[in-house]
Every structure is written in structure tokens, then in C-alpha cells.
Length: 386
Image: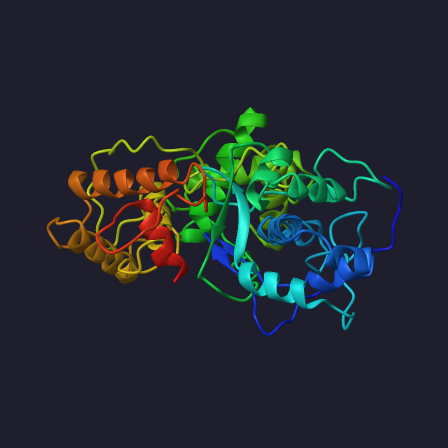
């Protein structure tokens, strides 16, 4: 890759991003870069082509933030403002009404692989002056003129296993590092995250050994951290300070290709669940991957059912998770106790699975009008949009 002078950008906008798990990102103004690169041409593009491009630009940016791609390399910015690497932004540039309207409509959506939580790295290029293995921007015009909608165009370039999701969880961009070093004796979500990431890294570096993912920093984790630090040229003290934290994050993203078109994908607990209950009753005070999986399913359901509140997917069963469980139990005729046994677990998974399967052709008109008395996924979608 040729050397290039980075133009770092730190985002500050009136609306800021969306969150999914430890994704906390921003609504960033992609409209000016479209205007800057394509001038008047983009304004005359078919709307579905513009939508496909904006979805890709949002998702690529959120992927950079989700993976902390530059911060894990020691930079203090989120994106370069260079099209050689990711996006281009010109503050105060002339924008077009059609792009303002569309961006306002979809600023809190992003593209992901079905069954995963991370924004997909939707790499793209113009397709004329530059070629790439991702989306060809001028090609989106041809596909839109041929009748493809935005999702169909995105699937054409990125595969049929992607979906467009909308989040109502709006927040500022945080830093994932907890703020102080983690060491033996510590516990909590940050330790849980490290354990899960180290276990995935160990698949490519088996000498590290695997850990029990319980959120407790014990002697075995100290030994694993020391081996990791030695492997990657860090001070092997078994303490996870900022340098070790971001090196673990960087290697984790690298082995999973989270910032590549070949992304392995990030799931709520690191693996895709088949919905099987593991026999453990979950309640306030519970922690771990099963709690995180439950929270992810509930959050997906909450996108389509306003009776279910959105919650933070952090693997910690707190009062907000219990409230969401009670709301779900009330909605689906279960014992309303805020405790997740086999019956509640199975029903949550079944409802999540129903949404996933019903979304086979998202946003497609069902063919007949919907009216009072109708029910099903299409009605849920209309309710969600309203």
C-alpha cells in the first residue's frame, strides 16, 4: 500500500450514532463526501442507488468505530477522511435535498451479516476509475435502473446473507478501554470481553491456551495474558493496561476479519446459538454468554415490538434486563417473574427466529393491502415504521 498522509477526523454532530453491544457510534454526515466526489451526478441517481450507497457508507464507518480500527493502532481518531482507506468528508460542502432527506430517513440503520451483531465492512469503490472486490458505486445505478431496490443491490455485491437493521439506541462514541488496568482479582464485563477475545485468538495461537469465560480475572488468565504479551512484544506482566487491551482488540479483529469483506462476524456470545437451553436459570445477578445471548435476542425483538424495551447487551443480568424479560413474559402469556427458565428462553428464541425467518425479503410489499384484523410480520414491520 502506498504511503498516504492521514487527515484524521473526530466526529461531532448534533445527532450521534447507534449502538449494538459495545458498538456506540455516530450519525456522521456522509452527504458532503458524496457531493464532493460526484458533484451533480449523484443527485440525479435513482433513489434506490443513493440508498444503497448511503447504507454502505454508514456501515463502513460504523465498522471502523466498532472495531476501533485506528485507535487500536495508536491513533487518536476514528476515521482518516481519505478514500484510500475509508471515507472522505468535507465540512460545509454543498449538499442536495434528496440526499439530506434519504440520510435523515436511514441514518440509524446499518448492514450486517445475518446472525451477527457487528456492522459489516461494506467496502466500495466508484467502479470506473478504481476497481475493488466490494460494491461498485456506478454499478448501483445500473442495478437500480433495472429495478433492484437498495437491499437487493447490496446483496448482489456483498452476498445474500446480509440484512439492513435499524437501531433506536443512540449514543456518543465511547472508548472501549475501561480506563484503568485490569489485573488478577478483577471481575466484570471488561474481563468477560477479554476472556472471550483471548479464546478466539487462541484458535490461531493455540499456545496461549483457553480460558473459562466467567468474567473473573484469575491466575489462569494472568498466565494467558503473559503469554499473549510475550507473543506480541509487550511487557509480560500479566496486567491488561491500555497497550495490551488494544493489542488484544486489534489481534481479535484481525483473526476474525471483522474489518474485511471476508468477516467471520461477531455474534452476541462469540458463537451462533441454536437456541438450546443450557439448563441454567437466569435472573438478576447472573452474568456470562447466556445472558448476553438472551439480551441480543430481546433487543432484536424490541425493534419490532414496542412493548419490549431495548436493553444494553453486556452479559450482565440487571434490573433493565429483568424488566425486558417481564415485558416479554407478559406479552407472550408466560409467568411474569423476570426469571428466565427453559420456557421463557425457548419462547424468546422462537420469537427471534420468527423475525429472522420472516425477514427473508425485508421491506417487500406483501402483495395485498393490510387492514384491521391482519397480523404477522408485515403488520409488525408497519407498526415498527410508524
